[in-house]
Length: 344
Ligand SMILES: Nc1ncnc2c1ncn2[C@@H]1O[C@H](COP(=O)(O)OP(=O)(O)OP(=O)(O)O)[C@@H](O)[C@H]1O
Ligand SMILES: [Mg+2]
Image 1 (cartoon, rainbow, N blue to C red):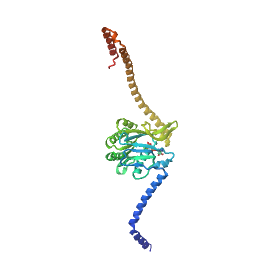
Image 2 (cartoon, protein in one colour):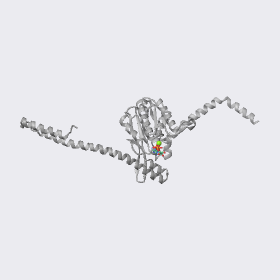
Image 3 (cartoon, protein in one colour):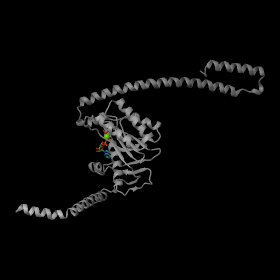
Image 4 (cartoon, rainbow, N blue to C red):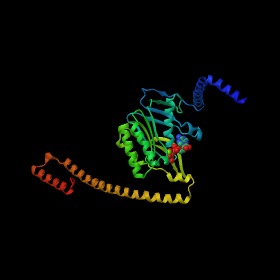
């Protein structure tokens, strides 16, 4: 009896299967659009200006839609982004742990994706070109089952980016290179940025703790440094989460480890080791600087003497000296120049 009713129902529904599936799809689409509209209305999203004629990404006071809700709207610090195809194509983003580098990378990618799928975006205003692809290399994962170590996965993903990103793509690289030794990682990161700048020419955000990479701004056209600010206080560190121009040279990793509750013993020992390491590099730096300064001092002393000589020549009253006096003055000046060894 039940089976018969069920079978009747099945064959009745089967006749309308196409309509039912179609309405389910339409409802799903409507549901997604309503949710986007609702979020836009509740959380103050704006309509982005998006067009294929726009060449640069200009986001003013952009926010991360999820982190903003997690930390509370009043606590979230909005940030701007400008990426063009000329002098600001690649941003090297430095800043302490926990300052908000990854959040910044992701919020900008999300704003681009949301705009391109027709949604309003979490920002005060946004002007966006149409990007052909968004590539990301974020986080650490491994795939032991298929024989891929964490670092191999990382390099596979980067290689996919390098081989496919175009000048119309947006590339996000979060701490690429950290999966291996410091120098290997830094060298790879450096070479990867160079390659993207010269070959792919994609708009790129590169978050990193390799502060050495900030030197690239001076070598590569289109590379600009930005950092996420933090303030050092007596009893720790305050994260300001504000993205500002310029590089930084500190990671405050130990302070963050303290916040995470690592035993005091480890923290104190780490501070001790850090101090020794910094002193070592400081000493070598100091040595180099003092050598350079010595060189400068010598040059400065010589310059004083050269100036004196020039003044003597300037004061010469050529109209009122005999040719013989002139020759003997010239002889004197020549001797002085020789004794100074100014010419090396
Ligand atoms: N703009 C912001 N305003 C307020 N809070 C923020 C902001 N950005 C990040 N945060 C908070 O800081 C936390 C850490 O951010 P995030 O993971 O982006 O830091 P990070 O700089 O990438 O750190 P790490 O160097 O350790 O990877 C977030 O989980 C969030 O709570
Ligand atoms: Mg991060």
